[in-house]
Image (tube, rainbow, N blue to C red):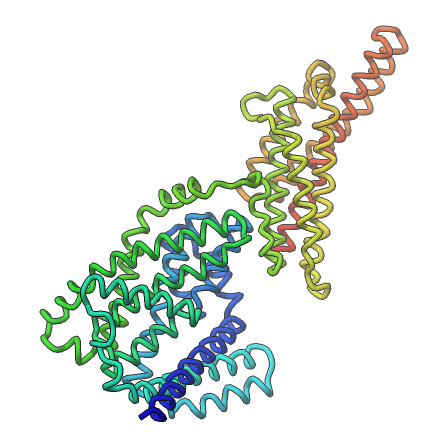
Length: 533
C-alpha cells in the first residue's frame, strides 16, 4: 500500500510537471510564432474597453498565457500607445482567455483521451524544431508542447486513480460556506506553488474525473486558482512604474470581485443544471466545471466593462503618480523591449516639446492658448528622458531602431536648446512683444505654434513640420531687412545703441526659437517614420 502510494504520488506529480513543461514550451512556441502579430493586434484593435476585452480574451486564448497578454498591455500603456482604460479591458478579457486551457483539457484530454495519439506529434514537433528555422521551428516547439500537455494529463489521470478511496470528498473541507472558503484558500496556495492557474485547473479536473472531489469542492478550488493568479501580478508590480502598479492592483481587485461573486454562484449554477436535466451535472462534471469557470469570468467582465473609466479613475486616485507627467511613461522594464522603450521616450519628448511651445506662447502674451510651465521641473524631465534613452540598447543590426535612437537624440538636443531660450532669455520674449517691427513675426510664431500643437495631437506630424519650416523661413527672410533698419536707425541716432542692441537680441531670439522648433518637428517626423518601418 505504501509503495503504491509513493508510485501514485510520483506518477501524479510527474504528470503535473509534464503538463507545466508542455504549457511552457507551447506558450513559448506560440509567442515566437505569433507574438508580434498578436501584440500589434492588441494595439490596433483596442479602441475601447469593450474591444480591449475581446482582443485580450482572443490573444490569451491563442498565446495560452494571460501573463504575456497583461505584460503587453502594461507595456503599451507605459509607452503611451494605449490608454489605461483600454488596457483594463485587455486585462479583464484575459481572464476569459485563460479558461480555454480548461476546455482543451476537458474535451481533448478526458473526452477524446489524446494521451497516446499525440506521441507522434511530439516527434514531429522535435524534428521541426531541430532541423528548421524561423516560423517552422516555432511551430515545431508549439506542437511538442501541445503533445506534452496531454501526456501530462494521462500521467495525472493514472496517478490520481491510485488515490481512489484514499482521498475522497469527505477528506477535504466540506461544501459548507466555511468549507468553500477553505477550498478557495487552498486553490490560491496551489497557484502560488505551481505559478500556473492552468495547471491547477487541470489537476482539479483530473481529481473530479477520478471522483476524488465533489463538484462544489472543485468549483471552490477553481475560484481560488483564479484569485491566486493575482498574487503573481502583484509581485510583478514591485519596482515597476505607476502604470505597472495600477495594472497589477487592478487585476487583484477585479479578480477578488469575480471570486466573491463566483462563490455565491455555485449553488444557483448547480440548481440550473439539475433543473435542465437531473443527473446531467455528474455525468458531465468536467465540462460543467470548465463551463462554470468561463461563466463567472464572462459575467464579471460584462458587469465591470460599463464602469471601466470610473474604475480607471479610482485606481489613479488610490495609486497616484509620483513622477512628473512628462516622464511617468519611462518604465525601466520597457528597456527589455527596445521598440516600446523608444516609443515611451519619443512620447515623453513630444509632451515636453508641447509644454515648451505653450510656454513660449505664454511669454509672448498668448494667455488664451499659452500656458506657463515650471521650467525647473521641465529641465529635470528632459534630463531624465535623456538618461532613459542612454539606457536603450537596440541590436546594431536593427537599422530602424538605431535610426530612431539617433532621431530622438537630435530631437532631445534641440528641445534642450529651446528650453534654454525659454529659461535664460525670457526677457527677450518681452522685447519681441515691445518691438513694433517684429509684430508680424511675433503673431506668426504664436499662430504656428498653436497649429503645430494641434497637428501633433492629431498625429499629423508632416503638417507639424510644414508649419514649423514655413515659420522659420518667413522669419529668416524678414531678419535681414529688420537688422538693416535697426542699424540705420542706430547710425542716425534715432534710437540709442543699447536700445538697438536689445531689439537685435529680440530678433535673434525669435529666429533661434523658430529654428529649434523646425528641427524638432523634423526629427519628430523621422522618429515616427522609423517606427512605422
